[in-house]
Image (cartoon, rainbow, N blue to C red):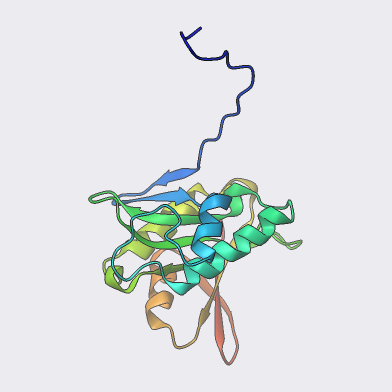
Length: 177
């Protein structure tokens, strides 16, 4: 009992997913943060000057739709990449949803322009891929990248993904056990 306060009769544990990387933490985006990001806000994160990038807002919108449909699973959601040195958000990374019927989960990411070229995407992709529930149940992680996006191709390659298919516009990379 606390003087002057009513007794707590109900409570819920709401612990946000956080994945540690070397210089970053990947912080799970909650439905409330996703709604704010999708509407043009900061989602409750302190961003570098050029963030958040439009891909982050689009991913937040997808998360929000899944939540509203009752299909959102946080472990297959979106994570904001937060620098440990200053607490600034530099980008986002996550899944386009849970694995499909073939056991493949697609991953996507983006970085604010101010944070590009510093290895953050590779570091975060390695951490998310190692942590991922997919790595525990045999699901294959997949990234589809525009043929012209050489930087992103380098990121997935450095993170251990291998080119498995290509067409005129897209290259498909996978990470398997």
